[in-house]
Image (cartoon, rainbow, N blue to C red):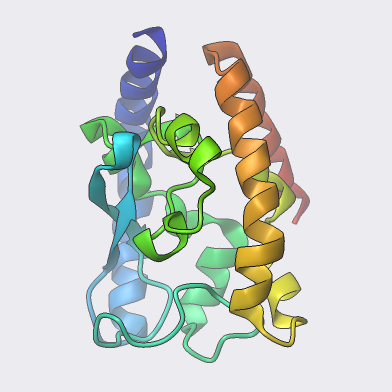
Length: 198
């Protein structure tokens, strides 16, 4: 209950404080390339319930289901504004709406698309999906250059499923075992520090 209250208060304050910046980013996205401002994609949330995540669109608009569901290296689909938003992690800010609505938390295992949740080992699936997915977590910090790492793989999707994903799941399970508001504050601070260092 304290975690949900913390999420609601902080997301409310964040949306109010960052409102003008969100409007400017939305305008930049719209002027940079044709398509919607937001990227909406189905992800798997708490208890396996699907929801549609909010992110600023950073790629050229393509029909649903076309292309990889991971970003690899210098992906040609990424727009000019998209490169900046990804590097600064500003594309993630609209997820404050998901936190405010209660489908996400500020901190928690990053929500995956159903395609990759299907690869979760049964022993870990229920544990990881017992909490709300988050905007950031320890895996987000450790894999902040994930697209570059995958870009070096001969088969990026195979590398993601068999190398990256198992490590992410282990980190997510460790978070669930230790979850607390104080740990969330620490991980938020670490995330901000990692973004500034870039």
